[in-house]
Length: 294
Length: 294
Figure 1: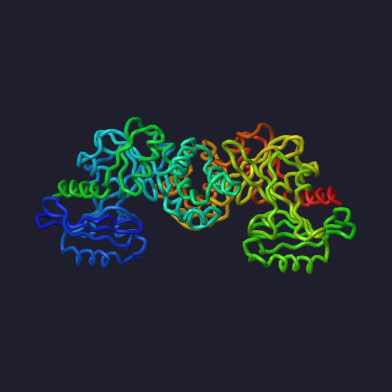
Figure 2 (figure 1 turned 180 degrees about the horizontal axis):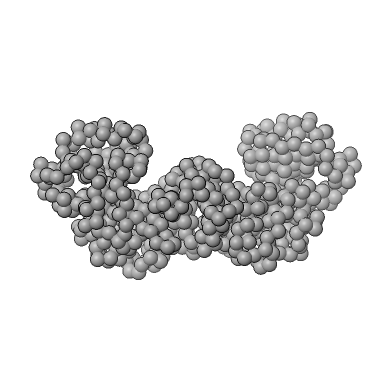
């Protein structure tokens, strides 16, 4: 693949996609984001969806990451088992168009008692390591619909754990006894922190969630705090599980509106959290992959 | 209230209602069930909905229990705090029609660190005690959308804990990454029991649920087992929390299609479970309340 005239990087998820034109030196040019996530595109329609990206950003080679490489995506790029770093990702790229469009594979974890998968976050995590914005060894988390806790060793992803906190929160907003109370924006304040502290105890999620309703009915909590409290509860339980995977400071990488919630919850648990912007890390990761295959 | 000519007992929940004509001796006469739960009936429409019951079963006095006494029901019957037995319920009945229609209140639990509410299950639980079908002291559970773990002492409800397991399972069926796999009927078999064992470990629910998907994607589990496994996982976590509330055998009371799942999960945890039919217990409870106010 020849990147001297620049190339296009695409972070193509389930519900959204972001595309960037990058110069030969890795600098950031034009870009756009839209709601044409993988689930919006019918089987067989990916070539047309890719053509739209090139119409907007130029007729250039591409590197794509995320759910675009899943069995619902353009071309399936089989999971690469952990531990894995850029070497494993680069040598397992799947070419959707020979020499013109490469899909980065996701990672898998399989052991006697655990099974897990990731697609897209690995580029951000390893990109942040390459950019020097997170340590080569330690614990990181990547909040989202499916939050990932990642153990880094010598700059590679040694193991990881997914907690579907964002999805559970969305489920509760969509219907059921708490839905009417969960429309408000989540704020990091007393209600959020109280929820985090309860979640950190690691109690039964189904009991903790019902108590949100009971506390309001019995006058022990305000309905307007329910959204922040419930978010805190779910994130606290997530952090309780994730912090067990490693000591020391935790890097929280991703979209700032989510990393600030996790950073606050990790601080409430008495650990140090550092926030890193996921977009910059994604671009650093894609540039590193481009460098390895040029 | 005069029951010599018989009366009508109504178990009126969120999504369904069951009504029974009972004779002066407590024996069971005509009955019906329909989908006119509390959420289907607009404010102000309860008198008409009650008239339909009397058209079908006779122009008789009534005793009603369940969500019909909530703030979304016919007339609100404020919660009675635990510990409580038939004495407390009978003396806190709320008369929707003076001398003609009594609503049984729900129960509340409020302490420094817990808040909980129940409406409807208390009649079944105390009714089962009155009928001699469960011990006066011990642990019971009442599965449903919101499962209740109940500590009985001297024939009264000393405390209880709600775990919204049924609601979480319904949420997961309604949308998200597991929905496509959760349509099959849940069966008590190897997949269910494996889910129960994982749930009994008390791990992070959001991580355990995501692993259902990962195991299928990585060929470690069969898609057709996902429904039973996931049900087992949620019920196992519920049982893990609930069994901590008391020693000895556990009575599981309610609808047989749910009690058999909980009984199997409790057995998997190494405890003895006895199943009791909720409908018979409800009728025994209502008859005892009628006796006390006649």
